[in-house]
Length: 215
Ligand code: DX5
Ligand code: ZN
Image 1 (tube, rainbow, N blue to C red):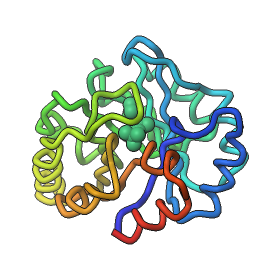
Image 2 (cartoon, rainbow, N blue to C red; image 1 turned 45 degrees about the horizontal axis):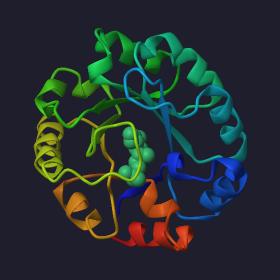
Image 3 (tube, rainbow, N blue to C red; image 1 turned 180 degrees about the vertical axis):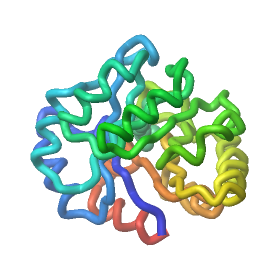
């Protein structure tokens, strides 16, 4: 059974409290929080004060996905805002090893996100040091995009790498996850499914989360 991480990027920003409450009562495992800087990705979402408020509404895991340049500058601030998992992009980090050590020394779990064009083999020398790999199955920046099918091959390759190393790393799939493709994603070896539009644009989000959880 996969963990379900609804992405609040697709929530109702005028009534976030209601959506947080819905998630708390649902079978959702993690709150997936997408931070964008308008530089690493061509969009701006929300930042520290919003996460600080969301943190107060939940005891569930706050999984913060940083789509920003120079994420190390803000690691401590996101810890203070309440992040449990802090994920940085491999493409945004010149000194990824240092960034990972910083995140862990601040007491958070460390995640590394990879864009669709980045081979998973680039994770070979860092995989034993991290807790989560966030495999982007769309180009980051927007919710509601279509799942890139090649991601399935990447999941299998990453699973093999993790198993060979005996590493304790979760594979999280982010972008275009639906009730239709979730099964093939889990079968390929995913542990965590992020879902934005699939959850929040559905008629009954709580029920959609329950359905994803059952797959
Ligand atoms: C995309 C974000 C995703 C996004 C997923 O840049 O990282 O987390 O919110 O949204 P859906 O599930 O709608 O593709
Ligand atoms: Zn995300």
